[in-house]
Length: 94
Image (cartoon, rainbow, N blue to C red; front, side, top):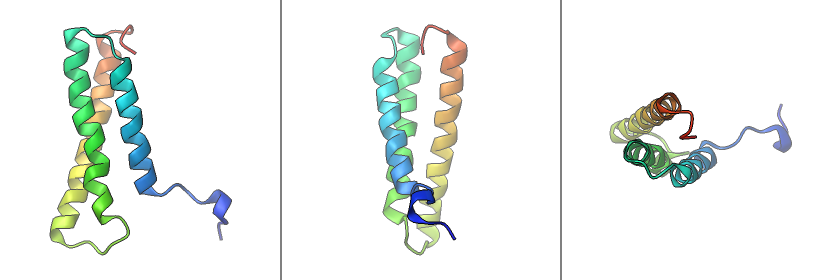
């Protein structure tokens, strides 16, 4: 049995921290057109993960709630792919 000190972070907390990290990353990107276009997409997808997940955390999921959680998962995959593309675009971006 795990004690409180070893308990994994709550997913709600993790999605909030993820959104804040995405915002900081976007702020740190250069002001080039390429970086800003990719950064804005990252900002949209990265911050929507928590927005789609949080209303249903800890509750019994119905059909529409399940679909929102699926959208949150899809947005997290999009955000991951954009980060990978930013890294490949130019080593100077990040």
